[in-house]
Image (cartoon, rainbow over all chains, first blue to last red; front, top):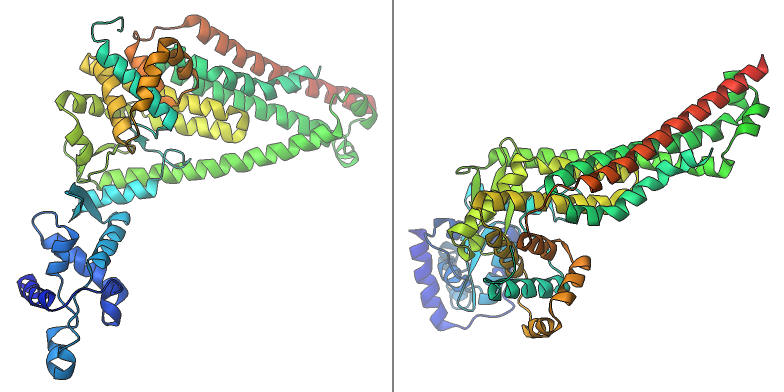
Amino acid sequence: VAHEASRRSAGTDRAARTPEPDDLAGGERRAPGALEAEILAILRLAQAPLSPGQVRDRLPAEPSAAQLATDPAERATAPKQLSYSTVVTIMSRLYAKGLLARQRSGRGFSYAALDDASLAASRMRQALGSEHDHSAVLSRFVSDLSTRDARLLRQLLTELDSGRTGDHG
Amino acid sequence: VTWTLYLPLVAPAVLSAAARPLAARIEPRHATWLLTAAAVALAACSTIALALLAAYAAARAPMLAAAGDYSQQVMRRGDPVSVAAGVAAALALTGAGGAVTWMFRRRARATLESYRRAARMSATDGIVVLPDADIEAYALPGLPGRIVVSTGLLACLDNRGRAALIAHESAHLSGRHHLFTSVARLAAAANPLLIPTVHAIDYTVERWADERAAAETRDRRLVATTIGRIALLSRAPSPRRAIIALGILGRCYLQSSLLLAGPVPRRVAAMLGAPPRRQAALVAICTTLVLFAAVAAVLAARDLHSLLELAEGATE
């Protein structure tokens, strides 16, 4: 319900002004971690993965409506919608932290909040480190490939495809 | 005779030099057991040799001679080890002790962490599906262990490919492969000459799981293509021109390239070949090496013991 309201206010606002690229975290009005929390909450409530644009549309504009009402002079300038790049930055930061899953959609990504089990799995992947790490006890299906190895592998697979009736196994 | 003191120290280097060819030829399960056991035995032998070298140097100290009531002259005459070598051995021994402790703590902590996390995951049939576009699959040791697969990877595979992947990962869990790699790392912490052996064991463990997957799916080619395709999907795409060049160079080039290649192409090539057979001769050679080192360590210990007895006798 809250999102419906915020989307409406954001929608009317967007028509009036163009977003500023430097408008990080909505200026000084939002606490640093607050925007991340808001975005996470929006994604948790959403039924399907959302693109950064969709998330931005669901974010409430700044500052809140109650504050706006007290100062009519400020109302004309203050309601700022976050820039698209800000939302993308924050969402990719959340992804890097292992809090979001993402999938390709068109030219960009759409993101979904992880449920608890997946969140644990994702955090663990970060905690348990890479295969070159001595503390890594998990066994990956495939290890990293060098360029040379990749070339060799393509050759092997090509041979496998072409040699289905050939001399192998 | 001094060779008994130094043979256990260089034997790990011999094992490491042979480890990769051995890993390529011996049936993977046997190779894993053999290499791990050999690594542990050789780490123990080389540690004993270091301790003996250090003991020889320590026995020369006048204080110890007085306390132990033996003749320092006899000791010095019979001593096959220079003081410098003894001191170096003592330092190496201290370093090895520290390294083993450090490695043990790291691995133990990581294993406990893995068990803890595996226990917290809700899984269906031991499989956790991670909603993620990245290509990712791994086995997480635990009681019970978990297989974690990303939706991005599952989307790239048909049912048979998924079966091969799951069979591979569950082979890691049921075989407790992390124990082999952990033990091997402890051995290499005691003697860094064993590091190439650790890499060989990492490889044989993967091959072991591959062979299990092949046995379960009854399709070696399927396992080969699944490994190869997933490995290529996991990395950024690169130009396809290289394939044509390699195609012209042909099989001979391919075979020689595999000698230097990383684990993934070698795994694929191994799956394309015939199933591995037992290689009794290679196992025997490897066992002989370990026996030589063990016998040398025992002889060296006996030498020190009889020298000490001689020195004790000289004071009476």
